[in-house]
Amino acid sequence: MIIQKVLNNNAVLTTDEAGANIIVCGRGIAFKKRAGDELADHPDNQVYTLKAGKLDERFQQILADIPLESLQLAEKIIQYGNDRLSKRLSESLTISLADHLFTTLARHEEGIQLTNVMLWDIRRFYPEEFAVGLRALAFIKEATGYELPEDEAGFIAIHFVNAGMDNDLKDTIESTKLMQDITNIVRYHFNLEFDKEDAHYNRFITHLKFFTQRILQGNIYEDGADELSQLIQHKYPSAAGCVTRIEELINKKYDYPLSDQEKSYLTIHIQRLVYQTKPVVQ
Image (cartoon, rainbow, N blue to C red):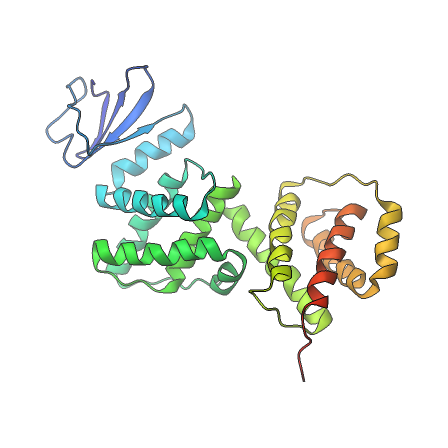
């Protein structure tokens, strides 16, 4: 392979046999190399296929700025996440996680530690991704000797949530905040504390994950369940009243009109959850 561009001592831009742009990473592979030189194959080299666009430009820029160790650490964490989560993850995860690890470790060396104000909610709403984050802390300690707090596991978990749902990090954080607001409305409306291991609670959270994504993306459910909606509201008036409070919040914050179908589904999920949960004893 012929080097097209040297990104740093450990990364170069080149093309594969099919003519596709690729980035090849490996320890010292570009040392004293320049564009036009031959790049020798090595089994330890890591290869990333590029697609045209701003993402590739960002990939090149990040790889030019971060050490190979951060990229390799990100790859190790992602491999564990792939095995644990068993779902397709966005290709951009390598970029975002490697960049995050590099800046996090740099801050740690300067004695700067960020507090994750959403840690409790991340742990509650995304337990599997949080488990990946906890394992990542062990990988980080093994590779660097640094023992980072659980706040960092939460930050890493959000990257996996984002990569698994194909939306940007800002939307993922906003979705988590909205889920927190909704569950708080339910808690206070019924004076309940939830059992995080309960199947109904986890089904409710799963419903909320996709429900909040639809709201943030502006995907409105089609109506067509008016009679069913009226029946459900009549049968479960307290849960329906709770949904009305949720609807008011969503209308105010996101200008999103809940359809009768969405309100019906949400009412049913809340009713199931409430039926299985004991009220708080004052």
